[in-house]
Length: 156
Image (cartoon, rainbow, N blue to C red; front, top):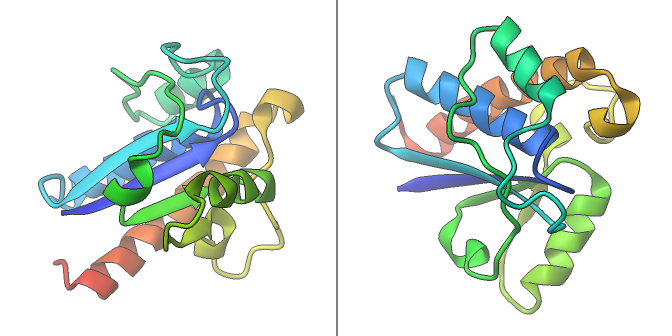
C-alpha cells in the first residue's frame, strides 16, 4: 500500500489540512483502499488536539471532513512505514531529515508538488492567520501529488 505522511510543526494547521484535503481527493478517485494518509508534527505541543479552529472552519467551508483528526508527533517508525513523507516548510524538512538519521529516506517539500508556484514553502496560518491562502496551496499541491502517485504507481 502507498502511504503519505504530511508534516508541519505542531500538526494542527497545515498538515491536518493537507491530510483532510488529500483524503477527500483520494476518496473521490476511489483509491481509499490503496493509499494510506496521515499527518504529524515535529513538535509535541498539541498531541491529541483537534486541528486549529481556522483549519476546521476552512475545511467546513469547502465541505471537507476533518472528523477524527488529532495531532500527533512524528515517530521513528514513520520513516519505515510511509512511502511519501512531505514537509510543509523548509524547517520541517530539515527537522525530518535530522530525525531520520541514517535511514535512507526521501523527505519531500510540499511546494514541490505545486507546479509553477512562487512559494518556497506553505506559510503557517498559525502566524499569518490566512487559512484561505494555505487552503489554496494545499488543494493545488494535493491534486498534483495524487496525479504524481497515480502515475508513479500505476493507479487508475
